[in-house]
Length: 218
Image (cartoon, rainbow, N blue to C red; front, side, top):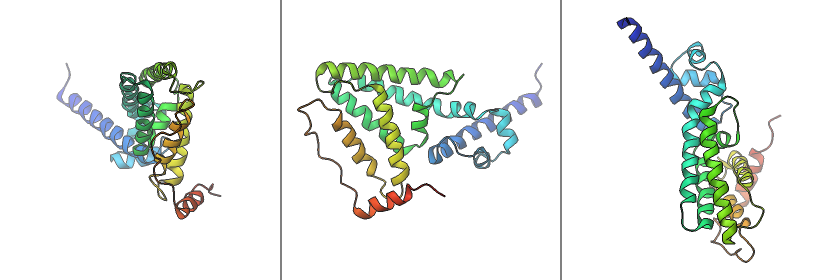
């Protein structure tokens, strides 16, 4: 028979787990998946030993935090696939996925990284890539997406966008929108280059500050 004390201990343990996951979600969004676990424990208000009891490996904590982010990306891809116009669905997905990156630094790493033994992440990741592959196929058949574009190219877009976000987050926080507009336009089939007007270009000062910010720390 389970005692009241045992039930209380389980409730405390579950509360600690929820605090750790909530803190990790915030820290990963701000600093990426490589953020120190000590920082997460401090924000959660627990000691590092408590964190390791709940999550013995970093990957298990990442899975707990980011499985829902991958679910969001999978749902985004499925929504894009359901659109009547495949090209508009492709454009919409790329723009929304990059906007998610701008709001949460963990999104790119969640989508592009593969953590062995983490089925909670692989299932929604596979869903997202499956829907994106189908969407790309339809847009190519429609004749509005240039031949040769693959879901792997979209991953490259996300990685490129992550680099721009790192370099410009403080100096020019809206620069990623221009990059995404250029990337999407580059995917158009011949004869469809006009597109919509690009977002404003960076000013010379913004570009200079972003380049300085991107220099490796020595």
